View 1 (cartoon, rainbow, N blue to C red):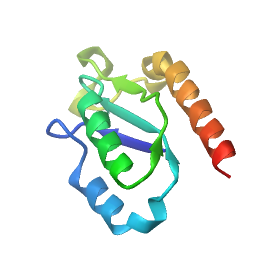
View 2 (cartoon, rainbow, N blue to C red):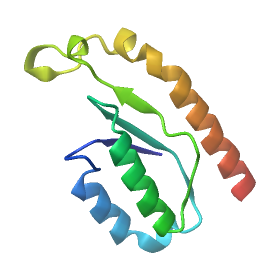
View 3 (cartoon, helix red, strand yellow):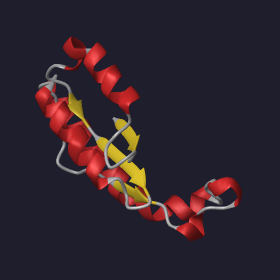
View 4 (cartoon, helix red, strand yellow):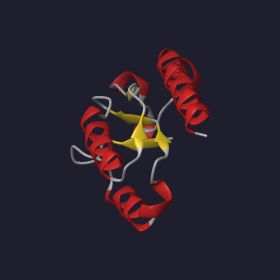
Length: 108
């Protein structure tokens, strides 16, 4: 499972470095991508999915996105009241985890 922010319309360079460094370990592994950001991180998830496929990983179809809006952020732009603010994203994340579990079960 990869949880990534959207950073400059893609995923962070540190994640790319980790993926490249562990190239062989990723081969044939299923993956779930969860992105987050003010727009949900869809572009980061799309870019990451392309790279994972290039690494011969098997990303599941569902890529949940956590969308932060201004009402969810408090002082210093930190997430306030996480439980109620993130509750709406629990179902898609749970569905993605079920897809990942199915992919893992069938892979091994």
